[in-house]
Image (tube, rainbow, N blue to C red; front, side, top):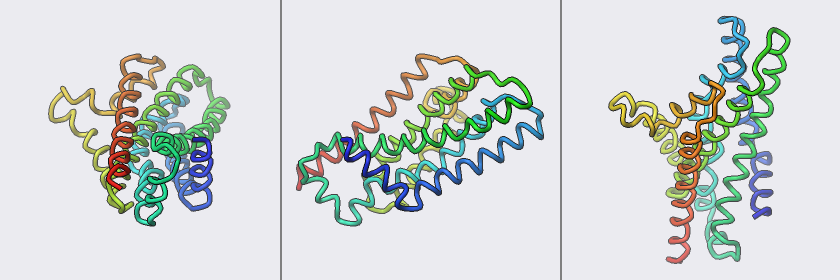
Length: 226
């Protein structure tokens, strides 16, 4: 699996994908940072992530839409399905590589924490809990993005499906409060308060595992057909 992780991770930087993702992420975060600090005179690091969570909806597909769809389009999926590598390890390798890109980007956001420390005293524990929740949200989004990529050979369609699903989860709670627990962003907004809710953490992890399992099952069936 390490070979897959290494290959996928490098591929993000051999192409513009990794740079575009990190660049867009930090540009948007810089805008939110400016608004929160200079417009609202806030030194709370976690406030940036309230707005920042919406960014993931539109940029996570940059990482995920090519993961499997590109393999199928280029004809390399055949090699993937017939190789000695376990499908589970392949999917997990692709997933972990994408998560590493997000983790690196999150580490970069600490520069905002350092800047805020010059103007006030941002709470380090709350900041770490926020980053933890943000990573869980990103993992959930990545897992669904890979699932969407596994059902089509068109990267654009995979990206549209991913974005469409995320936007749908935004608006579901407005139709009925019963859907509140299905809105991943709503669940994330509890983390910037500085408290880790076990139920919310389990929800993120369960969603992530479910999407990865569905992807593995789908790929296993394609392998058996061939």
